[in-house]
Length: 359
Image 1: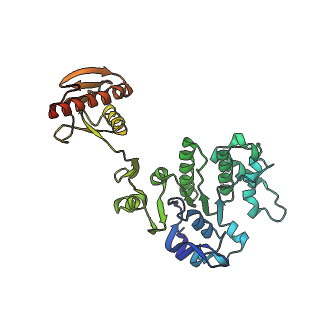
Image 2: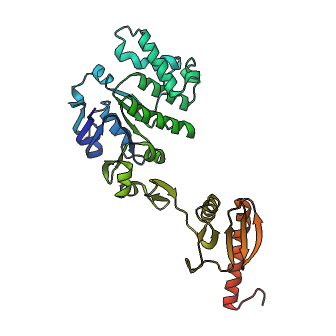
C-alpha cells in the first residue's frame, strides 16, 4: 500500500455567515500505508479539526484531501465507511446497548439493508474484542462502563469495521497508564500485521515518540512538520514545537524531562553510572540541589558538605571530609542534607563578614 491520504495546501476551520474561521492553513503532508502516525500539538492547535476534515466529517476551507488517490468529496458515505473508520472522544451518548452490540456496529458497512450479522461477522467481532482485551465487558451495557472501558469498546468497533485506514481522536485519553501502553502497542501491531494506516491525535507525547512510525507536529505558529521521531529530534523540530522553560528535551533518548531550577550545588561522589547514583542525583535536583562531580565543576559548590554513594545500597553525608550520616534511603538523606548545607552556608557568610550573632 502506497500513499493512503495526501493533503495539498489544505486549510481547515469552520464556515460561518460572517466569514470563514480558519484554524490551520497551507498544510501539505502524506499518510503512508502500513504506518502508525501520531498527530501532536498543544491544545487549540487544530488537531481534532484536521482529523475531522481528513475523515470527511467537515468540509475544508481550501486545498485538497485525497484518499486512496481520489478526492474525499467524490466518495459516498457508504464508500468512505469501507475505507476509513473513526474513533472520537465523545462516546457517552451510547446507552442500552451491550459492548458486544456496539462493536458489532462496526460491521454495518457490510451487512446490507437489514443489518443482519453472518457467522463471519460474529467471528470478526469476537476477534476484535479479544484483541483489545475486553472479553469481560462484552455483555455489559455501555452506560455501566467507565470512560476508559467505553473507549476500548469504540476502538474494537473501529477495528471490526475492517477499513484500511483508522482515525482516532485522543484514543488513550481516558485510559490508565498500563492501558495506554497496551493500546498504543496494539495499534502499532495492527498497522504492521494487517497493513492498516493508523492516524491518531494524542497528548501522550512521550508514548507517541516511542511507538509511532511517523509524527505530524502541528501548531498555529510553525504550521505542520512531519517525519520520523528520530529525524525530528535530530533537526530540532520537536524542541521547537514543545520545549519551554519547564521542559527539557533529550535528543539521544527522544524524550522530555522536567527542567528544575537549582539554588544550591553539592559534590556527589561515586560511580555515576549506578542506579543508586542516578536516582540520588535525580532526587537532589528535584529538591533544588545541583549535583556535581567536584568543586572544580562549580565555583559555588559547597566545600564543607558532600554526598557519597558507594554503590552498596547506602547514602552517606560527608561534612568537612568526615562521614557523619549513613542511611539506606534517599528520603532520609534529603531530610538531613538541606539543613546541613544551609548551616554551613550561613556559617561561611558570617565568617566572611566577620559577623557573629548577638555581638
